[in-house]
Length: 249
Image (cartoon, rainbow, N blue to C red; front, side, top):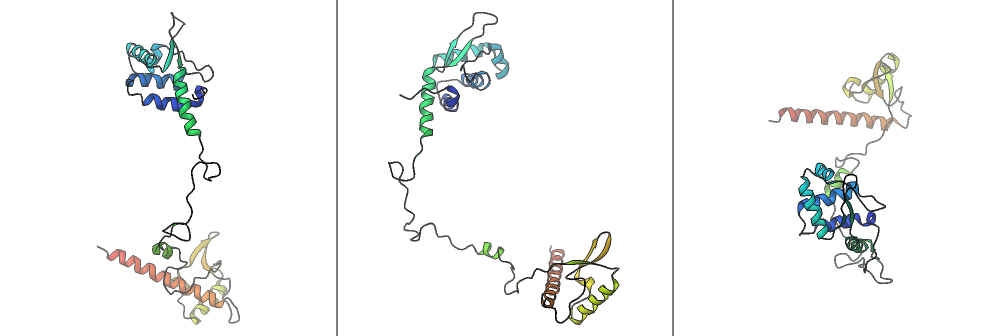
């Protein structure tokens, strides 16, 4: 026989078994649920709500509550000690047999099955199987996921280089002039067509790879040319996408 645990430890199992009692009416289940969840003292395992209190909470009549209490008592869910007047309400307590049944259900859920067959228990299946001799499941490659995770989804395109940008204000006329000349010598359109205009500290200017254009001996020259070239490609792609959207029916 299962050990009788404190009701507070097996309340969930008790309520589960109560809800599965096909011989109980819905009113009886409703009254039991209200008493256990609202009024039952966790230490004394007793409750003293009046018939009227239960009726007001559940929206049922006092007579319906009286019938439901009698039903719970007959079915062995509660031990009921009826009061004898004003100030002496009926006392409710989950019955010992119902608590023992709930304790048995709790013991089943508390059992832990070991994964390793040292002292019995569940035998863990071997890692290898007919489907995979190396162990585990072999999944086909996800081409869409691989394509998304590529650094650059354009096939055959050179890798993008990360170039830190600095702010060059329009008022820095000498620097802007030298940048325009350098871009022209590299066959790159003017600053305005690169869409690098920005604002900082309330001033208009451009986000550029440096305060001054590089000279021929600067090792970063190729990176900066690649940056502007990729910028032009991006602008062309966005322009084509917007044009396609406008022409779409």
